[in-house]
Amino acid sequence: GAWCSCPECKKLSPQLQYMKVVNAVAAAEELAANAIPVAYLAYHDTIDPDPKLRPLPNVWFEWAPRERCYIHAIDDPACTINPRYFESLSKYLEIFKGRGHVFEYYADAILFGGLGFATPAVIARDLRAYQALGIDSISNLTFGAYSVMAYPVNLEAFVRGTRSPDFSASKVLDDCAATRHPKAAEALAKAYRGIEKAAALVLDFADVM
Image (cartoon, rainbow, N blue to C red; front, side):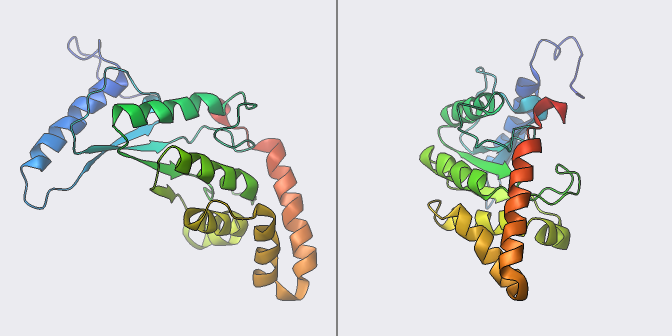
């Protein structure tokens, strides 16, 4: 929202305005000792790339699709929301010549309204899709102990998926129940599956969030 509207800048998209700043930082950083890459955040107003973007070689993008749908995997063509996001990621990879990271929200207590959800199958397919695109760096927003308590299945699925995306989503539910609640593992596994079914009914946020 807070983009410059002066005569010089108003003709530039938010992405191009932001890119000018990021490239300026990157140009200075290239001259510094122990230079490190500079991040361009693809998020909210910049989630869709402007085809005129020209990042410097030491600029990487960080793609954060917070308004996506979590009922469906990011590459699910049956979804009415996610194809746009998946296409934007593919375009960013092309523009940045593969220099990119993904920032996900599988344990975001704010996004999920403080409610506990479980989406291991979506996470598994997401991570396979990201790996197929060549993404090898994925982070996941958490809120300390609260996220550990509210989203144990999602965090376990994310950890397993970053090690090998071909993990069993169903087994994550059983393992979390057995590890966290060994005296009531069967009942908790059933409860986790109920939470997973509930998540599949409500997590299509997109722009309505």
